[in-house]
Image (cartoon, rainbow, N blue to C red):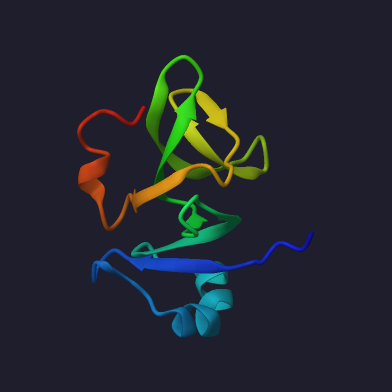
Length: 117
């Protein structure tokens, strides 16, 4: 199965995602010459249960054994060499049964109340 390679980029100074065409045109430059105010996020190759694409930096609802549905943030794990759902010190495999409820840039309020470990 081929995985689609896609990125999105958040401009911290302007407070919004850059357009897809801008990211496509300047991605190489953004990677080779990183800017402190631009955050690049990779597509996981998965969509959630509602068909929403899951990227690094997204906050998802996921079933945690023994704890029920929990909020987790998605991030790249260097050791596992993949994007995972982070819950405390645990990494959980992302799957299409999760639900994206926002991301850490546009919706910081969903992670500031201490319920994301």
